[in-house]
Image (tube, rainbow, N blue to C red; front, top):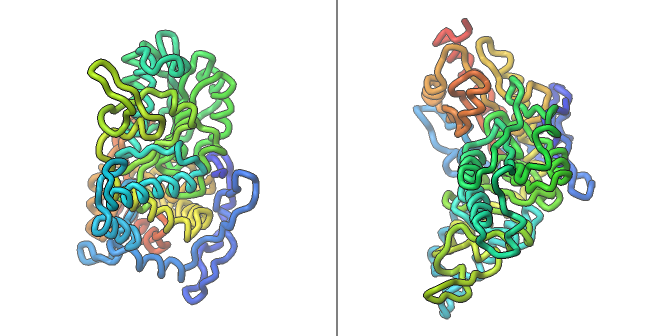
Length: 471
């Protein structure tokens, strides 16, 4: 799939993204929506969700029905954790009530049923991102998934894994490249890997808006580069990375590509094989699923070559007092008792998203993102971070209010029933590059309405007036 990267302008037409409340058929896609194509180039159904559809699906989310400080909740923190529909809550509860048992061990019926459901969940998630079942590893979250890759490469660099792991070895004189816009989860593990191996960490810069600046890409990603790691979508800026160009450069120099897909997989059609990345990570709790479950995608040959990160029970074939032999991927990376109910619930979330259509969700969020960006850009004293209005982004926008700390902004909005994220969003280097210490982030999802966004924009304007931030 192709999410139009942040360098491609789109129309800023005022055409609305919603149909009349009584009309279940949505209109044609807003001109502000990024172009969506399937991996084979076939067109996707990119109709935004209608008002009637939004009304119906919001009823599936119990948390959205609550009041906060006497106001209806406007939940604009889905980039941190999405709310869960009843179908997901029921799937996990049903498993716990009827089939709760350890997987891949035990000869009794419940253990067999649990194992079957666990592996069916893996197959469901694999199909969702265009991967094979053996290319999906369950982790606790995306942070663990990225660390699994980094520590696996570290083990390979120490000679673990035998001849198959030699191609993953990194040492003095080698380089790892990340961007200045990364979440700490896709930065700190690579810092640690460099410290352990003697490799050098290099950075692709961002411009003054926080968008990747690729003018010097060929100078930064060179024959010395062994790993290129970057986010598909920026968790602060909402900017969509030009994956094709970055992967092409990595292939030219023989580097591995590691993709942080936390802010892309939940929000649009993503085919990881079509993107040709070597590894990718995403989290269940950002895509209607529970906390405690994440996913690592890896090309089969690379997973089979990568030495394990965590060792112990359930990931071995033979153990003696002197040595152990490991199962093939993915089980070799799933040591110990697994997160079974969470994986099953994540598969239910994937089914829920699939019934709506990821192409339609992407179109809906593109319109939300444009509405946020355009509205914030018009408020005096507010600095929009990331792509300017008219440039594609997901349904996420971060901003800085001049002279007002983000915590004060967040508290003011919370008093009005509006939930947003404040702070550095686990991206201190990016904020430092932008000359600020923190920002406020509003992030929507498939259940977010225009009214949610408009309430946020009005509240931000009121915040500026209250604190005098327009000075």
